[in-house]
Image (cartoon, rainbow over all chains, first blue to last red; front, side):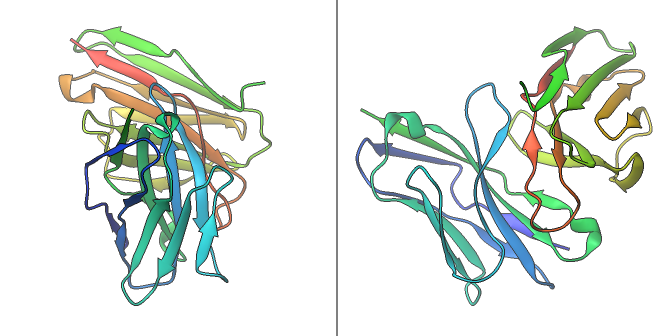
Length: 114
Length: 114
């Protein structure tokens, strides 16, 4: 079985500051990793994913995440945040067995202050 | 042109009632899901259908019954509603069940049981 731990429930940060949202996973099989973003009163949207290959993956709006197998982590980073980045961020894992269920972490609320 | 649409958006009802939530996707996907998001934003998978066949059935009370008339629709019927059923229910879809199949979410149905 897989599990995901997001270490911070809330991360307040000032606009234009860098941010890192932490995610650790646990699995006995190979996994695929995702970050989803949820804006208020909306469903989740895929932000970026790691399937294989380069361990650093990027999104179109400046976020990046690095897969670290030895530390079982997939932290999300952005060098300079905007007010519009305020949202809930979910790390998710999907294993290669078990019906390919996508398991979500508890979420991290990123709050960007002016 | 909504990709995954759920109705209704809000549902307020009394304990003991029976209610249904409908979901439709126009993405041509063959796999659909129901997730429950509680008040702490935790997301838990409930059911998944692939080409109208039930493939994931988590530990959910049998008061919850999904129905998939075709691969573009997945409805959720809930009997004898309880206070603890209050949550946001998200429908999602994907193309296939493999790892390279991120989820596309609807905007959710906020169910309030009084």
